[in-house]
Image (tube, rainbow, N blue to C red):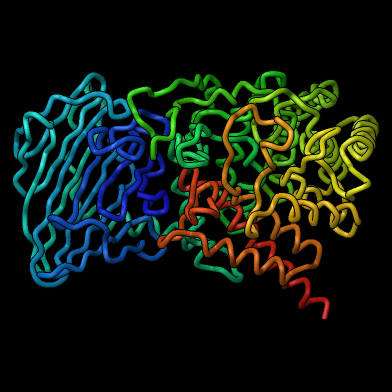
Length: 595
């Protein structure tokens, strides 16, 4: 399966991926970063999956989400009739549930279910038993139950549980898979039909709060639903993606665990949620951020767990062969221990934005911000790993320095706009010093462009954010020069690389990657701010055309093989859809108002 052949289901604690052939190939329980009980995505059926489809059929005829929900409808048109499977996860009750309902649409269709539970990332085969008309599975800390009215059979050698049955027009056959800690009582059974009604109502009630009004409504609403699905409801943390180790290049080594929350995403995510009217989600994300970063500023990390935990040790899952043999398969993320200057600016920018949009913040939060600023004042001149988490030597990355400037600037604005206490004169001096340093050492006057790091000839697509961050106004010729240079040197078939890893040895990894979709959206934003709206809209339309049939995007796109790559679906890509659509709508409104 290609990455874009998958669709997302979830309950705002965890999420699963359902393939076009009706197989759930990825599911971690009980939360996003837990071990997977279905890991066929990174191996094969023997590593765990749940197939539910017409007997002998592969890819479906059509699929879609029910409007404004995360309920997936997959349809097969067969020789003898037509059948539909509804896949969803109800809002979390006692335990996580996956509900699958087979509906007969026309004629009569023979169906087959094949369940292979494999706990601990496809490694542990559970003890299976049939009792009280249901299947029970247990191994170590994990237990699961499958309830359905059809007869289940388990093969003693393969430990695969199957069901063969037929549906006619009007029939409905439910399946409910429930996970629970093995030492806890069996959860109460879920009524599949009632859960369908409740889940549909829940998603649609939530989407009624959407305040976005502008073009590209369908794309924005689907992206908001995806962002909500990637939210860990107990804490408000938002994972970058529900998967690990989907490669940036097929067969490559750039395979990372994205089931964590990145500070890099903070202000972009807050802006997306607030612009669409979802104040409660924005507040929960802001509160998660404040809890996560609390402590000494020298210990600030670039990412945390959904609960805000700091230790995310990286290890390899050696028994999994990887997606399309892309190794290693990683769990945890060693980049969590990197020193990145930009996270200070990102955090302070996010908290400033929260005040701007009316989210009340305590005095203690401002005290924390001042402590972070004191630390940054003594650290901004140091080289770091950069926003892209390079695993090569530390450099004086230009984007990192610009975010240090952002930190000082937002603290100054906090005092002036919100009447907070602070040493404005000192922060002004620091802001001016950083600005001079960046313009002196991070700008190439011969090419009229800012560079990736001091002394580098390479470029960085993150520099497209210069006008958005306010480091320079859009009309400054250095902004247009940088935008044009990035298009000239980093674009491949109109989409942008983050940078060229092979140009200066900055990465520390052997293989290349695909074009980075968030950066390609940033190009549309930058073009809009430069007044080049037609180019911006063409870029945005091109990017929306890369979504899969149910509106989802991964992290990257391989222009050679014409396919999505990287972890999927990617929050950063969907946040970018929301923000770019908003930017285009605002630009159009400003243009209309000036007439």
